Amino acid sequence: MSAEVAAGIRRVGVVGAGVMGSGIAQWMAARGFDVVLRDAQPAALGRAAEVMRGLFAGAVARRKMSEAEAAAGLQRLATTTGWDGFDTCDLVIEAIIEEVGAKRRVFSEIAAVVRPDAIVASNTSALPIEEFAGHVPYPERTLGLHFFNPVSRMALVELVVTPHTAPAVRDRVRDFARALGKHPVTCRSTPGFLVTRVLFFYLNEAVRLWEQGGDLSAIDGALRAFGWPMGPLRLIDEVGVDVTDFIFGELAHYYPGRFAGTTACGRLVAAGLLGRKNGASRGFYRYGPEGEMANDLETRALQAVVGVRPAPEPAAYLMEIMVAEARRCMAEGVVAAAADVDDALRLGAGFPLSRGGLLAWADGAK
View (tube, rainbow, N blue to C red):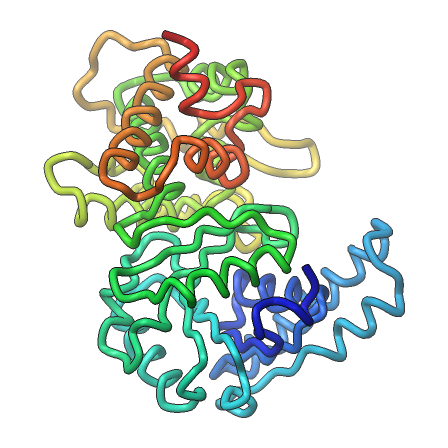
């Protein structure tokens, strides 16, 4: 499906010029959509412009597009520190920080400038859409459109619908996601949606194993042997130790009594161990010219071993956590089918292709 037939969506606004906003804007422009990227900070727009030019150059280098196609894509991108051009957008995607108050303010600003028939979406990875978009006019035209990082490589998009989202709007945005070459999985708006919720229950328990005296290399090695491209503690470094700690706090807030957030990531953040985020080179691992290695020298002092228990086999234990949470999502109607869970965890979290899908594997392992 091309931009011309994506259910009437041809011009898109993106609010927030960070990693996700710039990645989303570039991907859409590369696929024929006109895009205006907005950030109140000129410096952020300058960095985003460099990132987007780099993404186009990388696509040319990998022979994914010609130089002429890349140049045309760049021509379809505009930037602004105000709201210029948003009155002609068919769809606006908010991609700012994960903070309810900030998103609520931005949604109010968007609602004041867009056409009455424009669709407004959020790229939030975990926050229920109604918490910050429920107050805007025409709630039937609001929903979540959660892209995964990096946008240029991750095929999954979670299409997050609220009780107010009109079915016709959901269908239009689903067609739009497919026009982008993405695989949309429809989720009910609930804290963490599907992938973030299932994945971070798993990551939290991996940190708990480590807090209880587990060996980092043994934990991550067991999950790599299972087939994951990287172990859970290494994945936390990739996501960002600070981001992980924030999401742990959000899930503890939304699922009290079931999600007991671990504290080690907060201690690592306080010590400046942020993983690989924004050029950082230390977290659970150290990263340098010689490659990556376990950062035991710095992290052991922060481990603060508590509640030591007989160590379970990491892969079996952590996969049980993941499967149990996925089944809860199914029981709560977060997604409609087990195949949606399997697709989402495979495309959005890296569940091993050799195992099929998470629930298909779990059912076959019985």
